[in-house]
Structures are given as C-alpha cells and as structure tokens.
Image 1 (cartoon, rainbow, N blue to C red):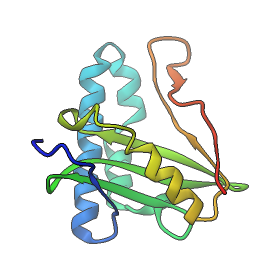
Image 2: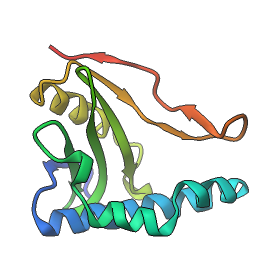
Image 3: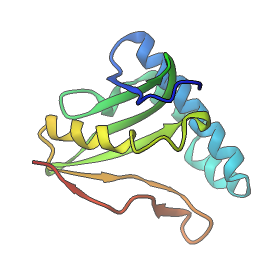
Image 4: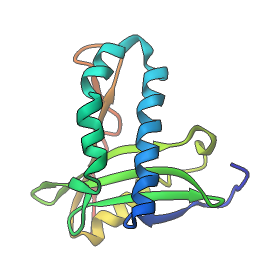
Length: 151
C-alpha cells in the first residue's frame, strides 16, 4: 500500500462494499490460521466454514443500522481494513472482526477510533471490544479491555 495518508473510512452499505468486507473477513480468518497455527483446532471450531460463510452471506446482519455498522477503510483506493459495531443491549456496543491488512498495519488507530465515534452516532453510550484467541486457558483473551464513554 503506497499511500501514507489517513485512510478513507466509510460505512459499508453497497453490494460492492459488502463484498469488500467479506473478502477482508476471509483474509482475517486466513491470517488467524497462519498466526495461530498451533491452535488450529480451536480456530476451526470457532470459524466453522458453513457458519462463517452463512454469516458473510447475511452481512450486514447484526451490524446493520440503526444500532450497528460495518466500517470499511480504504487506503490509496484499496481495501485496507474493516470493523463491525454491533448492539449488545443496554447502551453497549461491541467491536467485532476488526482487521487491518498487514501492509497497512502500524499507521495509527483508525480501526477503533471511527468505531467509537460511530457508536456515539448510533446513540450507544459505551463501546467494548470483542475477544481474540490466545495461547492458553480457555483460548480467549480480551484484546482491548478499555471501555469508552460516549457523549
């Protein structure tokens, strides 16, 4: 990704945008399979192909407005990342499936910052992250225990 400017962040709404998010989600799973190869059995159980493809086919699904959003980042006109925001009830939203392509990583916090801002526009007071695979215990760790107060 040659462009070093801040990415364009948009709400994925068009069929083409949703296809971009689907492709990024597939890259997200592929990345996990390589990065956490020692835990392939847990990953295979979490990302069962049929259920995962059904989730992708149903997008925006749980991330649909008015209480959710799918954000897509483009850098230099290329898809660079995505993150979903879904309502968890009680004024709490969860960031889910945040992924930035490796070649665009290390260029700031443009995944979580727009998500927190979007949560405010969705009348959500709190945002929290989801969990990710780890190397021990139950297989999960909280990747971002921070909770933001919106508004």
